[in-house]
Image (cartoon, rainbow, N blue to C red; front, side):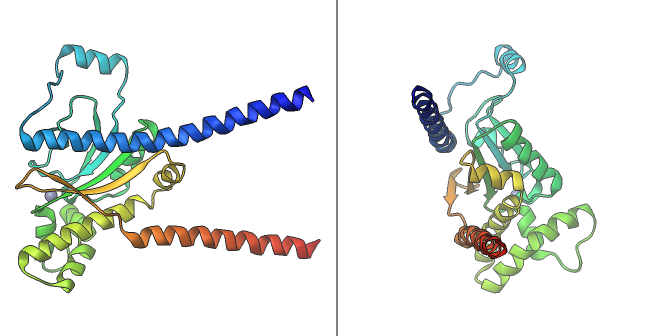
Length: 252
Ligand SMILES: [Zn+2]
């Protein structure tokens, strides 16, 4: 009797610990996002926080290791440096920068390193207005070749969709930029590591666009279709499980 009561207490403790770690993970993703948005507000207002970029901070993050609070995939464009636009210092953000903020296995591997090994609770996919890589893709003629062609190929589905939707040149460019951000999100979510961490509540993934003119980072809505797909994936899993259960019952 005493033993069962003791195991009950242990079990309850485990449940509480598991629940609080899930709540903590979710809140740390939200907190990390708020930290970025607060930093962006300071950047827009020109009221930068004082940062230690000297010897003492270098020593601190060398001895203590890096503990950035967010992983960001953004464009290589010199006008979109995440540390500046989010007003962050040394060791604060784990960044992957590629022209057109697209991902290939190496970029995706770097993102996975940031979220799984460096344990950032937040992953942001950040595109930006007037993106040269997207602009070049919209104007590209013929079959893209070489290494730059590999970037163009990645952006082409977004460019095609935007052209089909139509509008002025500016509107087509803006649509293509947003479509490209959503395509990158969809590519990132194909990573089993990212998917698992999101599923476990340990990682929050967000999509955003930086405005070159205003300096503001605008949060975008995650594509709804992907969420529905995820739910239906779960349903399919359950259906498969049920079918297997029935098969087992029949076998007995
Ligand atoms: Zn760009």
